[in-house]
Image (cartoon, rainbow, N blue to C red):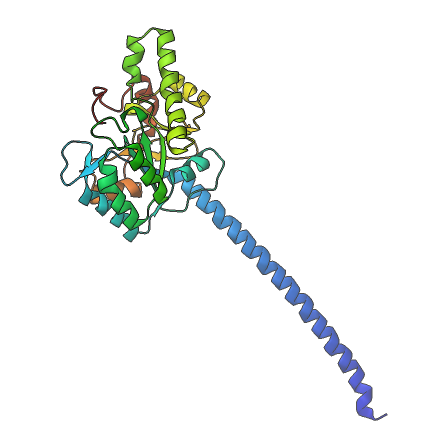
Length: 310
């Protein structure tokens, strides 16, 4: 055996030990990187949840549309399209109302940053003629709150067939706005307690039955007529099977909110340009701190006669 061989064995052992050390260190580094990545992902998820909880989600409320703003509840079709264009061009995501409800109730993840919800009340015929084409063009989900007494009955309202067509697009969720849109505050003054209780139960239960029979909808979301509600009405709604209800007090929905008292931004035609950017961007004061007083006083909307469009 030559002298070179005597020194080759220790060198070979050293190489093997070095390889083992490198392999071990690689495993440690890989494990550390994985743990760091998982920790960062968890941290980022926590940050998103905290930011969503702090800022909340704006729920927009429309009523009717048209070429001109004929009244305070009409948003022109051009202004509505400017809203959708602004949301698209500025990185907002229009999400289903159900996503916010599940989040507020602790049954779903936080919405993505810059989320917005679109709702519309009353099933005015212009939802079909003016709103639908833009919903299809911009591919945004909408929740439509209807009171069945008007459907296929009132001249301003849509028909049951039109509501079925909306549902078939996959972009519209149809929910309850009570049976005939009563002013609960006025009815409570007018009726004896037992009669008022029967009225409330009928207003909350009948639309659920009718929407199920007519459209196959299991309605469990409610829009308060005129925004009027109080703790007693919220209890009635919960017993009737509603999991969330919506007002017209301006504010952003947050997990700390009572699910039966969730705010919405009632939009008029003047809410455009900078005004609209402030609403969706969180630049306006949150009126949620005033909800209790407004609820107890029945404020939030001006009553109208039962036969007119709201």
